[in-house]
Length: 154
Ligand code: ADP
Image 1 (cartoon, helix red, strand yellow):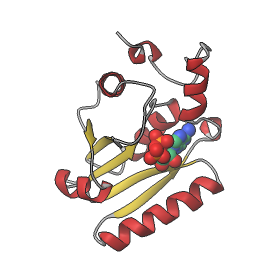
Image 2 (cartoon, helix red, strand yellow):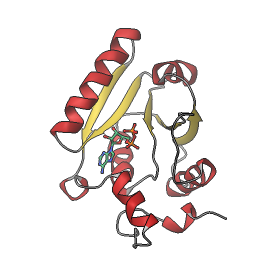
Image 3 (cartoon, protein in one colour):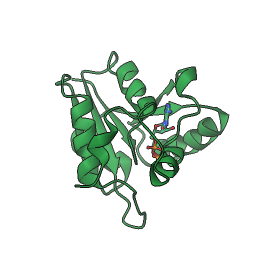
């Protein structure tokens, strides 16, 4: 049983993130989408809504699970028995940033490898912080986020 963890803030989970899961799914028996909760960070979208949103996106995939965690990503991998960390790369700055995280993760937990997927060109400019800015200013985010209504506060 090969499990991969796709960790991130996913504030919100965009079509770019969605595409990475759909690429990775061919290599793993199960993918865990792990929403990392950092108590020092403020999120725009409620954790509950982010979970509901991701669950709805993958409701037809019994091999995609969603969870939250509040610990080191490698420790969460061990907890859920994931052998790989999945990350997405949009450009060279993502690569430099991701490379140092992957090296650090490898240094503290040598058995867990990070596997990278290149984003499709159409998603390479898409990032959650721009979506937050648009949402806050009441712009339509539906071209970039599937089912954005699920993220709205109730
Ligand atoms: P983090 O706060 O951990 O960077 P994000 O939610 O911003 O969390 O991103 C999670 C992962 O998804 C990261 O590997 C990031 O590079 C990747 N990612 C973000 N946006 C895109 C996108 N549009 N296409 C492909 N990968 C993306």
